[in-house]
Amino acid sequence: MFAEQANALENQLRSQRNVFNQPFEEPLRALRDAAQQMRATAEKDAEGLILNPFRAGDPLSDAEGPELFRGRETAVGHIEEILSDATRSASLQLLAPRRAGKTSLLKMLPRLLPDTICVFFDLQAHPVATTGAFWGKLAEQARIQAKLDRRAELPPLPDGPPMEAASRWLEMLDQLPGGRRVLIAIDEFERLQDLFPGSRQEFLQLMGLFRATIQHRRGVRLLVSGSAPFDELDGVWDDHFISARQIKLPFLEREASVGLLSQPAPEFPSGVIPIEVAEEVYRRTGGQPFLLQVFGSLLVGRLNDEKRQVARVDDVQAVEGRAIEWAETYFRDAYRSAPAPAREALARLIQGQTANPTPLARRWLTQRYLLTPDERLSIPLFGAWIEHHALV
Ligand SMILES: Nc1ncnc2c1ncn2[C@@H]1O[C@H](COP(=O)(O)OP(=O)(O)OP(=O)(O)O)[C@@H](O)[C@H]1O
Ligand SMILES: [Mg+2]
Image 1: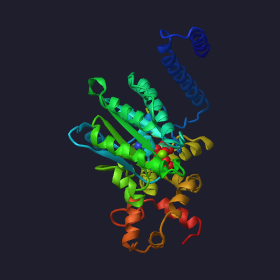
Image 2: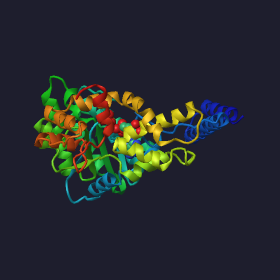
Image 3: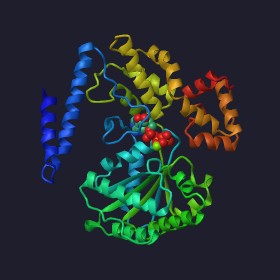
């Protein structure tokens, strides 16, 4: 009934699309989505099933499960601090291992930093091959996002040779009315270098402009996000991202992890994943956010399969094999990228010996949050994966 009326209303709006009724499209869509969600919940309830709120895989955002986004107060606090200090030039590097929640944080920034115009630019989604295309896409994305999130008009990229146009555009962004600050976040920045095949010159020009922006445009801050520290990359990053402040994303704390699992969404019935079950998941995963979501999903799935309403600690053990399968790529990438001394330290830990890592191995493991302060394996599930593949 509601769905029919919403459809009729939407058709009416569509047939006379203009500036007056356009503002209604978004709320109407939201209302319809909410109704759909309510219907799904009602249907599940009718069957006695629990609706799965967890999202293991895709990044979270304001539109995709913002209520699942937990922790990160420290990282956001750092970003805020750097943004608000207009007296100093600075850039930001968000540095965290794979699947740690980099993209989710960047996508949540518009909500977390309400005074800043946040521009999210994903090099994976926009594989640009020239500097002209890079600035064209970036300016286009910036305008779309500013309008959507802030109802703000950003200037378009001026005409002219790409680098000059970009330089003028950045100058305009630096002088927005009301002194509004702009944060340009480039996700998967390591790819940037590979985007300009055969033209190192073009890449260096781009980096030169980044450097000038960092130095002179205090109203525009640049953030790059990736999983390799600058000192492991081409020296060009260190040279150009001057005064870069590193923002790290450790795994979620115990409290945030347990909160996520036991109350992932306001409408999730309490007691379905009891605290002691959530704690067991935290113990097996060390609070690694992707793995928490995987376990959450698997636990709800198991309860539904068995037509039960409350998870038990032994359910965690029961779904572990499937969690390992789900996270196969994540574990395989982590293991394959490990240098030999780090693998050896991992093997010792799994066999119950002390890690005794070489300095290189310790650095490698610590940067990926794989060692606890007392040098145990922070993700026991990773150990189970290694054993599963008989790699020790
Ligand atoms: N703050 C958070 N709270 C709860 N879950 C999170 C959080 N951040 C990320 N996740 C979960 O972890 C998973 C990975 O997140 P995301 O894609 O943002 O990580 P990433 O670091 O960008 O990964 P990649 O290196 O593969 O690009 C997502 O499925 C998401 O649900
Ligand atoms: Mg990502």
